[in-house]
Length: 186
Image 1 (cartoon, helix red, strand yellow):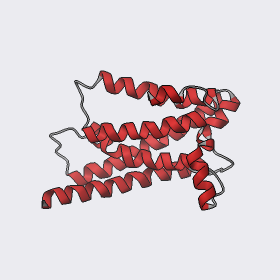
Image 2 (spheres, one colour):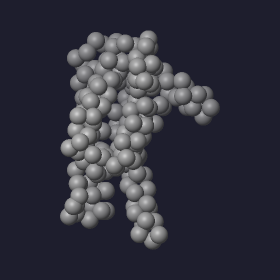
Image 3 (cartoon, one colour):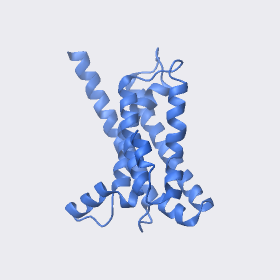
Image 4 (cartoon, one colour):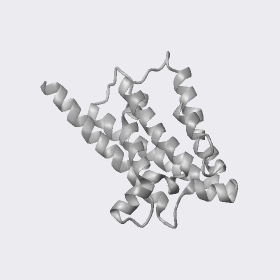
């Protein structure tokens, strides 16, 4: 429902279309594979939370998202950092799904190693997304491509987005370890 509401009059229709390829592919894929491949309820909730943040960013374009503008004004930032927050959220919210996707029970690999490799998977997905974003911007309508990239004059935008995703994944990894330790103790 939220996706449909945010599809109405986005700031930049071309950028919105490019940004929503992820949603249009991932949601039906999750539905079609639900019976054969189930993620944990937590992974579905976290994935949905990420897609909500992503959908909001696609409606306004990441550079014009009101929440990012509020943060910029409140913190005296030079740019709207909503895109960085969503890249961080990708790492934080999708680490669990990456682990579940690639390390199904009965996992013969120690949990810590699974988490470490899941951080590497998030990094790989983040790097692949930045590369796809760049290639799309080259091929797509230049105006939509620039809005899609959302670099806002920052020549290091792709690298900072990548690092944000990895930082989120590392934090998620630490939280998973903490949760596992707490569950063993209690």
